[in-house]
Image: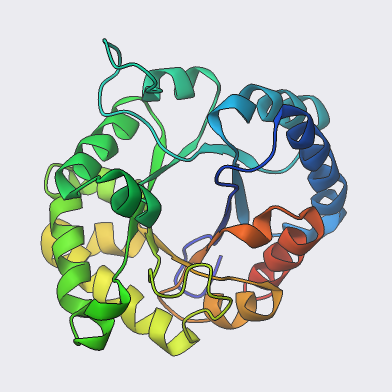
Length: 263
């Protein structure tokens, strides 16, 4: 646990990378590396593509890999005539524990608005999993001094239909869109300011107990060198890692950096 009492979480979002064979090899290597004590008091999840989930689940369970299985997205409905969609029901039956909701790429490339994000959060909770709800501002919003306004609006829409107990269990990932893929993460101070804004809005909407329980991650060009300084911030409870999570060695270093902050 950190000084806040919240257990850090490091989540690796593989995006549209790795086929099922590559996934099997990656999970096995993660088991070898993380089994050497790199996890410590940190929760770890990996989020492969849908087609790789069964392969990842099999390796994680058979080899005792110390990670939770996560998905990158889900449908708003549990079933129906929705060609190409994958429901939260299906994910839960694969023992998925975490589901990323509202990633900036889903919002920007696939037109998911705050209402869709809110419906997906409900679907995840309805099926017994934990959502990782992504929020963050674009470069033009940051330049215009609208970061706080944008974050508060996204949090308000996301939490509007959730009970305080659900809010306390969820994860919120702050991912500044301007930092993703740039190789230049936000500074720890930037991440802390945004995380404090998010926690403050959660307090206003769901109460102090929920705000104390919710874990807030930072995501955006995270690497081994930035992991520890980011998670050392009082309101940053972990990391959502993109490209750097594809390499087991690099991802293990990031997990180790986060674990080093636990006191």
